[in-house]
Length: 77
Image 1 (cartoon, rainbow, N blue to C red):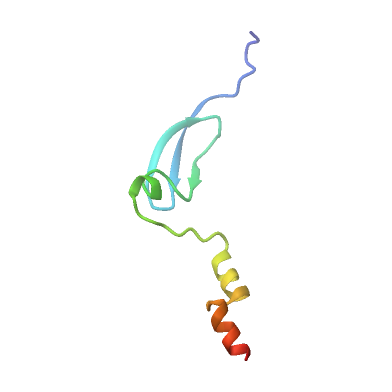
Image 2: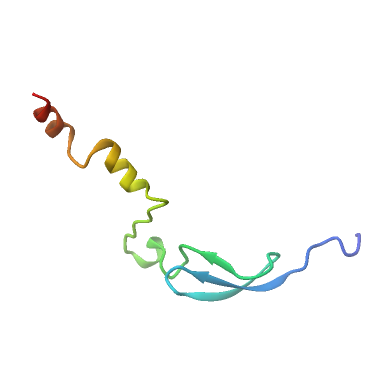
């Protein structure tokens, strides 16, 4: 095998949006920031969490309205 071709394997800190931090090893240098970790992920906690990526829910509601199709049809008449 060739010597010195593999990247260095560093210890990094992972910081979650929920405030949890933990240490792991990676080839990435510096800290890693994540939105969801095992401490707050719905699969592990059993709780539902809505993750709105860049206002997509509001954009959908503006585009299609918050009412149902039957309500919109009644207003049209």
